Image (cartoon, rainbow, N blue to C red; front, side, top):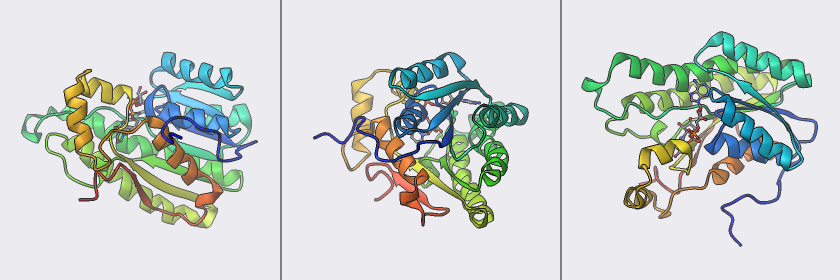
Length: 261
Ligand SMILES: NC(=O)c1ccc[n+]([C@@H]2O[C@H](COP(=O)([O-])OP(=O)(O)OC[C@H]3O[C@@H](n4cnc5c(N)ncnc54)[C@H](O)[C@@H]3O)[C@@H](O)[C@H]2O)c1
């Protein structure tokens, strides 16, 4: 039996409330669907409201409960409103997957416009900071919770022509460790996940439909292929669940061996 695509829910998240950023597609959508399948009510947050609504429709068609929220994670007021809307709607917040991201500048540092650098850091690093700043108090008010921040294989190693992306994703790992130490005493567990290449709109834009390019990228992963987003989502849900109750401040690679050699 294939273990790549969606399978039956492995956790019971009934009466739990979850928030996923970057949930309009890819890894975030897969996490939102998996959380909902396990019984959680899910706030599907993204700057792309139209596709976030599509994620909500998929959840509802499968019998789950979800709410689409437009957010720009680089805007602190927008992030505060996202968390407030989630808590106002369902009364609590148990889980968060801070996952919104953008394709890096894809050019050498000396050619990278300042605004490209600043936007990458704003969305993928400062955005995670803003999200946790508002999520953690909401979780503490409810007795605790769990957070997973999306880093990347590029958070563990250097990649040429991706300095903005690599710096942001390395930053997410450090930010996660500090946040984990600050909050485990409040019963909020915080970890980061480092996916290898997984099928998503971001990766589709990067590969531009080229099978050759996909084969080349797949060959960088010792497993010999890229991931389905559900394979990342299931690790996120495990990290959020009580099955990972002793996992604190960890950096979990789900990358087909990409960062092993
Ligand atoms: N797919 C991969 O190969 C891969 C590998 C490692 C890490 N990641 C990370 O996983 C996360 C999800 O990416 P994905 O591959 O599923 O791509 P994706 O493009 O499907 O998802 C990213 C989502 O973030 C949203 N977003 C962008 N800027 C935003 C903002 N300012 N505020 C709110 N939402 C915003 C986009 O609209 C999009 O829906 C990203 O953080 C990415 O860096 C992806």
